[in-house]
Length: 493
Image (cartoon, rainbow, N blue to C red; front, side):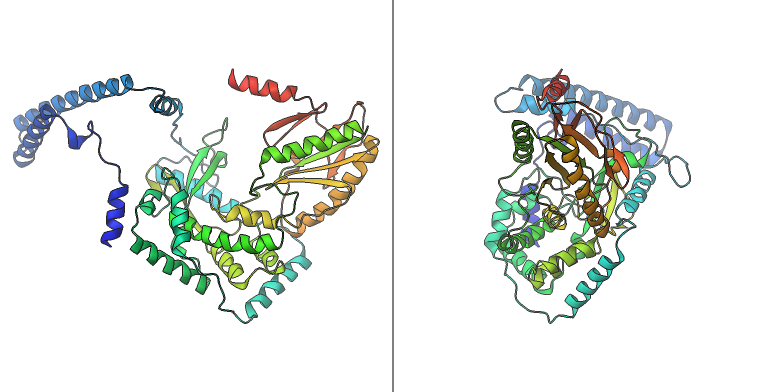
């Protein structure tokens, strides 16, 4: 226990000279006089003692205000561009800090007043968000249920790849010390200061985690910080984006599971080549380059390119957990990896923090944990069996999906795209994935303008746009990037 306490102390920030422990002598004298008069007043409770205490309190506050002001001026005079202090101060001053105003309770339509009430209202909204979509294919559901039941009835093997202290040390070397801690308040800096004796104990704990296929429940509660979406009404809870803070030891456990998952995934050549999200040495730039080159090759061959950009509603939050476990079983991952991932995904909870008030814990019925190390990788697996057709190009970056088709005429480019979308719609329903049809966009890259047939998704015609945004870049019909250049200019003007 003393080793953990020492690690905590070593990772704590020492007090600076302008902070209370290092007050100059004249301020310490004023503080002592104020405290002495306060005790006299608390003992006798007479008006004269109260007046003396109030005057001493005012003298101390004025002196502290002058001292803080002088220290602030002194610090500003010492700022420079070489050690980064000027840029850090500028960033802090430019950051907008806004408090959450009174929220309207969707159920009662009454305003909230306390921070706890605000936290509860936002938690109510998020609890309804972290549920599976209420549609699906009965045949697929039966197949998934049977697959999981048969897997549970299999004879459990005791094989698993043991955790070595070097794995934990390697993780600790690369973690960033300024990352916010989870609900347990254990920081990354504390982990970095742990002695070897504690690292060996952690190794033993993680080996037991893998042996018994149980992810500890105390690591499965996320603390959610609500951040207002730009330009949205702050009085509605739906307009807040949840930022999840997970326990640091949970992330370490995820990393150890991920290392074992990737060993098997690499042998299976997962994910598919069209998926660039969360894949080593691939980025949004590579996927954009692939899409742009495909369109330009079509132009050079006098082919029209029809493209549709899908928007998946709450992609990470609505993952059907049983469906994901079924896919792990189908890909024949080792038994212990499937069971530990199942334990990791089930019985998860979250609380919402507003100032210093935490909401009551709420259960997550679906989805992969936001902010996790393992979560995005297994989400990619969930998308891995997306339908593939020879004359259709699929472009994936996690859930950002673009589908392209080419033909000698716009009609011949749109027809195969429409046929593919029918197969895709059935696949989306089977795996309980919902599209935002109103946010899905289509575009036709063609030299000639005309009234071409519209692509339909679930029977809804998708209006063809002159420009679309994909992976942060605006693509226009001529592919000259003028629209994107103008957007960047406006952003920095």
